[in-house]
Image 1: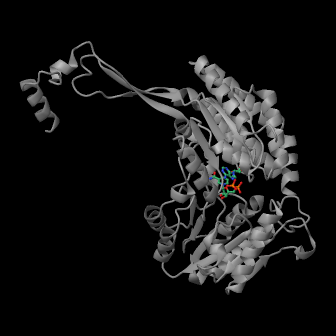
Image 2: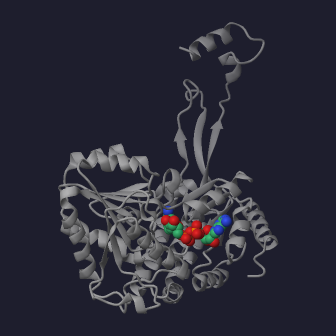
Image 3: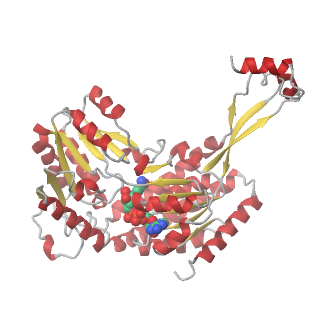
Length: 476
Ligand code: NAD
C-alpha cells in the first residue's frame, strides 16, 4: 500500500506513544474494553475471515479456520480478560534485614511498555496477529500490526476491521511486502513480537538491535517425534496424522520428522497411513484438506521430495483415494513419507512446513536423543510411550521450546502454559502469566524507611568503624 511508507509508520508510532504517555495511568477497564473489542472483531467477522483465508490459501477448511484462527483467538482474549487483574497485581518482595522492621518496603510493578509491534506470518494469519494482541492490550500497551503479504485478502480485511473497531492511537494495521516489513522491524518500538521463520527472525532481531528494541521471536524448526517402544502405534499414528495433515502441515508445531525403533518402523508408518486414511478418504476434492499456500512453497516441497528420492530415500505417497495429483493446479499435496533418509537431504536440513514426513530409526533410544541434541533446538518435542522412565530420560536429556507427550501440538492450546521456542526456534514466550509479563516492564520499586539507613549501615563518609563492621557483615 502506497501510504504504508516509513513516514506513515513513524507517524502512527509517534501518535500511539504520545497518546500512551499522556493517558497514563489507564484504568484496567479501558484495557478490558480494548480486549472486548478485539474479541468482537474476530468473533463477529469469523465467517468473512475464514472465507478470506480459504481464498488466500486456494483452499482451507472453513471449520479448521473457525477452530484454529477464530475460536482459539477469542479464547485467548477471554483468558486474558479472566486473569489480567491477577497477572497485573504487584509482587511484594523481601527487603534486606532489618530494613523491613524499620518500615522499608519492596515491590515489583508490572507496567505497560508502550507501543508493541507485531509481525505475523501467513499460516494462522488471524490467530498469530490477534492472540498476542490480547496479551499486549491486557498489559496496557498499544499495538501496530504488520501481517503477512502471502495472505493478502486476510491482511486487508484485518486492516479494514481494525480501523473500524479501534482508533489509530490504540491499534493499527499496515499491509505490504517485505520492504514494509523491513521498515516496520526497524522502528523504535518498546517491544517487537515476530512470528515467522528463523531466517527472517535473524533479520528482525538485527533491525531491532539498532534501537535496542526487546524482541519476542516465535520461530520454527524441526520438531521431532520420538516414538518409544511402549507406544501404542495405532493411536500415535492417528495423532501424528492429525497434526501433520492439519493446514497441510503448515504449522510451526507440526511434527517434522519421526524417530522410531528400528523393528517397529513398518508398524509406525502403518499407524500414520491409517490415521490419514480414516480422516481423509480423499484429498483432492476434499474441502477439509488445505492447499499449500503458494506455488513457490509447493515447488519447494516437491523439490524436497525429489532431492530425497535422488539421494536414496524410499518415497511412500499416502493417497487414500488413489487420486491423480499430477493434473491439478490446486496446490494440494498428499502426505509423503520418506524412509531411509540421510542428513544430506534437504528434508533433514530445513524445517519441512508441509505434508512431508521423514522417518528415522534407532536401535537404542540414546541415538535419537543424541541426534536431537546435535541439531538446532526445536520449537517442540513429542514423545509417545507408556514408559515413564524413558519419557523422563527423553525430557531431561533434550531441550525444546515445549513438549507434548502422547500427542502432538496440544501444549500450545493450554492457556496456562507459556508458548515459545529456545535458541534457533525463538526467544521469549506468550500465553499465560509469562505472556503478560513479556509485554510488561517489571519495574522494581523500593520504599525507603525514615531511619537514616546509610548512616546506620556505615555507608556514609567519613568512614569509620561502622563501615568496617558493615563490610565484615556483608562478606560473612
Ligand atoms: P516469514 O519469516 O517468511 O514471514 C513472517 C513475516 O515476516 C511476514 O509478515 C513478512 O512480511 C515479514 N518479513 C519478511 N521479510 C522481512 C524482513 N526482511 N524483515 C522483517 N520482516 C520481514 O515466515 P512465514 O513463511 O510467513 O511463516 C512460516 C514460518 O513461521 C515457519 O518457519 C514457521 O515455523 C514459523 N512460525 C512460527 C510460529 C511460532 O509461533 N513459533 C507460528 C507460526 C509460524
